[in-house]
Image 1 (tube, rainbow, N blue to C red):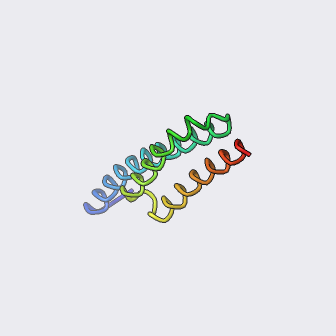
Image 2 (cartoon, rainbow, N blue to C red):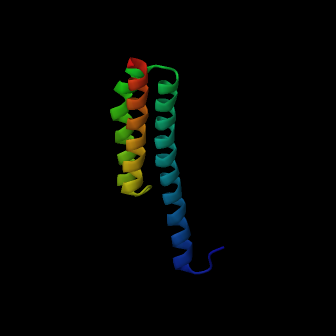
Image 3 (cartoon, helix red, strand yellow):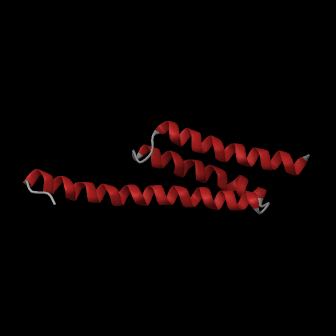
Length: 92
């Protein structure tokens, strides 16, 4: 347990930040899971409409400092690629 005033304050601050970070990370993961489920179930039109929202949530999470901007770019790229491959497979 924290002993000094500064350490106590830092512990309080870190707890608030941890809660905020968990919220954003959980939200992002949920959106990605929903998107993946749509693609796996063949709901490609719905997934295509949902994609901008997923990418927006990913970059919003990075803007809050929860994930690095390069990680956000990688995740966004992967969901885009997933949809593109599914659309390509469906057409040809």
